[in-house]
Amino acid sequence: MKLKRVFAAVTAFTLCASLAGCGATAAVSESTVESVAESTVESAAESTVEAEPATDESADTDAAEAALRIAGLKGPTTMGLVNLMADEVAENYNFTMYGAADEIVPLLVKGELDAAAVPANLAATLYNKTNGAVEVACINTLGVLYIVENGETVNSVEDLKGQTIVTTGKGATPEYVLRYVLSENGIDPDSDVTIEYCSEATEALSKVQAGEATIAMLPQPFVTSALSQVEGLRVALDMNEEWQKVAGSKLVTGVLVVRKDAVENDPEAFAAFMDGYAASVEAANNDLEGTAALCEEYGIIAKAALAQKALPQCNIVFETGDEMKTDLETYFNVLYAADPASVGGTLPADDFYYAG
Image 1 (tube, rainbow, N blue to C red):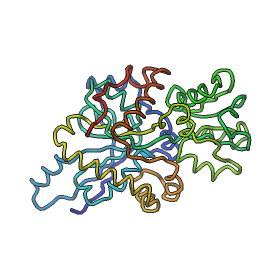
Image 2: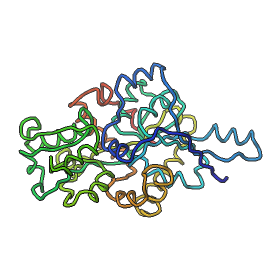
Image 3: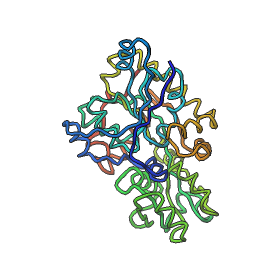
C-alpha cells in the first residue's frame, strides 16, 4: 500500500532549539507527568504518517486500529527510526513527529500512543508516574554531549580545572553529567570550575563567538553546526568517552519507551517492529547520505547536509537486554543521586526493562 504523508501543523521550532533539546533531559517536570497521569491532559498538534485508504474501507479501518502508534522527537533520538518510517512495512505503523517531549507525555499516558522515542530519564519518570504501565524497549541514542573549545588548552578533563564552561541544562541531564564527570576526575564542580548555564545552546555558542568564553559543552548535532560557524572551534572532549572511563558503562541519551498493554496485545507484532527498528538503525549508521535525506524529508533535522555530517557523532544504537539494563541502571543511579525527581522519585524496578 502506497503511503501518504500528512503533515499537520506542529509548533514551529527552530533548528537550534530542537538540537539543544537533544542533549538535555526532557523539559517535562515530574509534576507535569503526574498530573497527566491523573488524567488532566491536552492533545498536542501533530504530524502523522497515514496509509491511503484501500478499496475495502472496513479492512483498512481494522488495519489502522491495529497499527502500532509511535512518536518521535526532532533530533538524534528519532534518526535511527527514519529508515523504518520510509520502509514498505511502515504501513503497519503510525509514525508521528513532535517538537517537544511535553507534547508526547499526555498522549502516551492516555493510551493514544503506544510507543515513543524520548530522553531516557523521561522514560523512568513515566514508569514511576503511571504505576509501571510503560517499559523501556531499547536504548536508541548514546551520549551526544561534547566539550568544544576555541583554543588548544583542553585535552583532558583535568585541563578543565580553573576554567569557565558555558552550557545548557541546569537542573537537568547536562548538569548532572558534567558534575559527575568532573567530580570523578577530582574536580569540585562548585569551586574548581565556573559553570555558566544558558537557556539555549545558541546562547552558549554566542558567548564563544563573542569571546566571552572559550569552552562550552554542547549537544550533537548542534556541535556540527557550531564547528562551521566559529573559526578555530574544535571538539576537545567526547563526554560519552569521559563518562565511560569513570562510570564503567555507556552514557545514555534516548530510549524507546512502550506501553506494556501494547506489547501484551500483540507480542509478535511488537517483536517484528523491534526487528525492523534494528535494521533501521543499522542503515542509519551505514547509509549516511540516504538516512540524512530522510531526516530532512521527515522533519527530524532541518537540512540533509547537516544531518549527514552529524550522524557519525550522534551515537545512534539499538541496545537491548542486559546491556541496556546495565547502562540505564548506572545512568539512573547518577541522576537519582543528583536529584531523585529527575527519574520520577525512585529508581525503576526490573519490570521496567523489556525482556523480549
